[in-house]
Structure formats: structure tokens, C-alpha cells
Image (cartoon, rainbow, N blue to C red; front, side, top):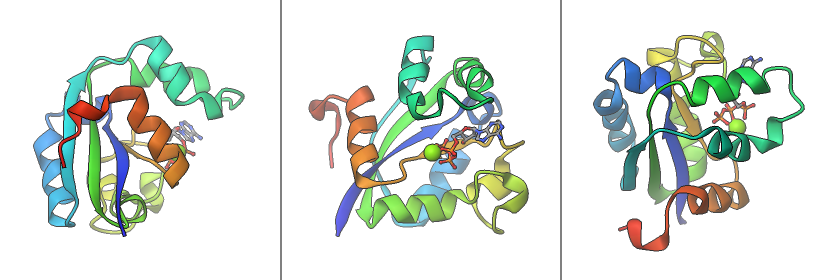
Length: 139
Ligand code: ATP
Ligand code: MG
């Protein structure tokens, strides 16, 4: 089934000029980038986006990290896009990520792990709507 997922190329990736390198992995996996923009996340954006983690000990650090430099927000489209992107991202902790995954190739640490991808259809919908009006998504 063709579906859409929400992706973020995180500050550690944009700072190291890895937008193109990560997009190449995404496109090679057969996912299409149907919306993309580079933004500086506000604190409010980041707190809302990661609201599910607000009681976790790393929440403050997570918000600081996500607002520390520009990010690239994207909508990816393809067959089983949500699971496929999670697969090519690799495990949250790069030390546990499989060979060839984005996090294995590029992540610096669990906190600076280069990419975000939605984890389910409901979260994908909410996350896409936080950053993209329908008119900015061109499939
Ligand atoms: P994401 O939601 O960013 O795609 P994920 O779904 O693999 O990542 P989550 O459990 O949702 O992982 O955690 C969200 C983000 O919070 C992680 O990507 C990571 O940057 C940060 N994070 C998670 N656990 C830790 C931790 N123990 N210490 C520091 N940061 C963490
Ligand atoms: Mg997550």
C-alpha cells in the first residue's frame, strides 16, 4: 500500500552537510521525497513534536538538540513507507544499528542520531500536518 511518512534530517546531519547523502539513501530505497523544506525548529515546535517524551529524562536535551541548528523536514511516499523508512534509518542507538542504515553510517550518538521517522500511520498523519499544509505536498 502506498503511504506517507514524516522525516526529519536532524541538526547533527545538516551541520555536517549530509542532506544530499541521506537523501540518496532514501531515494535508493525507493522512497520519493514529495515535500521538503529546511527550517529552524522553534522550542514550541520541538516540544509539541516530541510531546510524547516530555516525562523522559532526556526531554530537555532532546529539545535543545532539535533547536540547535536547522533541520530538513520531509514527507516520504512509497510502498509501506513508514516501516521501510524505519528499516533504513536503523536502531535509535547507532551502536545497535544494522550495517548500511542511515544511523549506522552517519549518527554520532543516541541523542544526535541524524534522522527521525514516524512510527505508525496515526503519528505520520499528525506529524506531517504539524509542518506541511496539503498544498506543499506534491506526490
Ligand atoms: P525518532 O522519534 O527521532 O525517530 P526513535 O523513534 O528511534 O527516534 P524515540 O524513542 O522515539 O526513538 O526517541 C526519540 C528521540 O529521542 C531519539 O531519536 C533520540 O534522538 C532521543 N533519545 C531517545 N532515547 C534517548 C536517550 N536515552 N538519551 C538521549 N536521547 C535519547
Ligand atoms: Mg520516535
